[in-house]
Each structure stands twice: as C-alpha cells, then as structure tokens.
Length: 328
Image 1 (cartoon, one colour):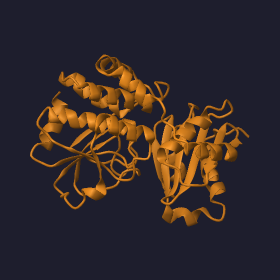
Image 2 (image 1 turned 90 degrees about the horizontal axis):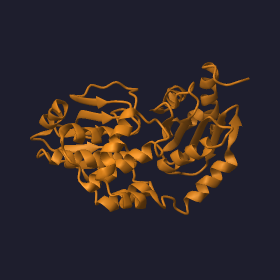
Image 3 (image 1 turned 30 degrees about the vertical axis):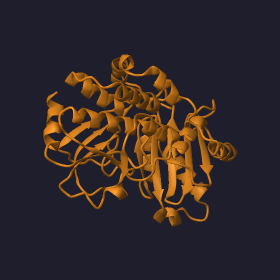
C-alpha cells in the first residue's frame, strides 16, 4: 500500500499520461485501463495514450466493449509539457517498442526483463505472465474493489498474455486469477475470447506456411508483406505448435522495417535474450524466456544485403550456434 501511495503522491497536481507500448495488445490496454480506474479512486485523473496503431482485432474489441478512451500521441503532443507525468505500463523507456513522448517518465510498471536500465522515481518491474497481474495486485493490496469492467479487462489481458495460462505463468498470476474471476463478467469474457481472427489473416497464415524453413529445432517463417505486430506474434505461436519446432522465428517486411517475433519452448533458449543478441548491431529486441519481439528499422535494411531473408536467419543461427544450442 505504501508503494501505491508513492505513485499517487508523484502524480497529484500534474497532468498524468499512462503510456503503453506502440502497438497495444489486450494486456497493455487492460493494465493501463485498470491503473487509470484505480488512480481515479484517489482523485488522480489520467489519459491513456500510445503511439503506433491498434492493429489487433482483440484490442479494438476490448476498447469498444469497455468504452476505453485511448488517444494516439499525435493528438496529444501539442498539449503535452515536459513537466507532465508519464507512467510507462507494460513497457519500459528505450525498450525499442515505445516512443519517447514529451513529458517526464517518472514511473514504470512492467513485467518484461530490462535491457536498457533507466532510473524512475517509481519503479515496479517484476517478471510475471502479464502486466495485468501487477495491476490486479494493486487493487488486492489496497483493499479496493475493481468494478466488473476492470476485473473482466484485467482477466482477459492476463489470459491473452499467458496464452490461456500455458506460457510464462507465475504463482502471482494464478493468485490474481483467483482474485479477478469472481469479480468479472464471465459471459462478456467469453465473448471477447471468440472470433478474434479476420479473413485477411488467412493470407498471413498462408505465407508463414509456404515460407517455413527448419534448421534443427528452429523454425523460420518470412512474411514478405506488411503484417501487424499482433498477427506476427500469433504466427510465431502457430509455428511453435509444430512438433519439430522448439524455437520459432517469424518476421515481416513492413514500411517501418522488419518486425520479428520469437517463441521458445527450449529451456536453453531465452527468446528475449536471443532477439537482443541477434539484433544488437542492426536493431533492437528483447522479451521473456518464452516470447519476445524485435525490430530492424528501415534505416538498417541496406545492412542486410541482397538477400535480407537469409541475412536475418543467419543472425539468429549464429547466436544459437555460438551458444551451443544447435545440433550439427
């Protein structure tokens, strides 16, 4: 409770912005929304914001279902001041997937590993299956009841980021599931979980299947056209479902460069560390042991040479070979 009081005191008297990563998924949206509603209980108003796009059907359904107002940076930048308070949620400054907004990033609440250490006046960075777990715990510790929409949103974010409790689950995730379940609208939760694929997504699935290459237990798939972050992540889970694949690397060529997603079931391959090491000289990336994401910016595309697909694959194979993961 004292930790939450520190955050509240830090925000009082200032315009407050709760910023997610640039392509907010259900966990990021749920966490930001849950924190916004909790701060309101203490008289602190805030604005939810992001840069990039809402490019996932599950995310847009969530915004509509709970009437969440989440504003793009371009609509706020003219009004923001350097002294405004920014709380980074489900992301960290300089993580590679978050824009540096005007304002002072005084706080960070995140469940991802840290690759670029930063100083925050309030810091809560713990490895859990979902950031929504941390926000749910704030309610539990403070003795505050989340309303039904908040509880449902947080539980949905928790289930989505842990792939229905099959990925990266911690004891705290399970505990907060127990806290949220009796408070949520289970019918609404079921509605959110249904029909989260669009017809256009089938084209991406087709490209992933046609392009798959297997090197030992590592599967690579290249999407030669622009694909949303969320879809790339879904495809990496899809490739990982193959019995022959323990590490999946999926990447898409887009207008902003090459977006990558990695999944790992191999205890010797940390997905986030693999991305960070493979892209360290040409882009940025990171994440959890089982999942991570990265980006090679458009300015670095010439560095990939005449055969960029092969170059990207080799970046990962070189790291895996150096770590002694690949069999000869």
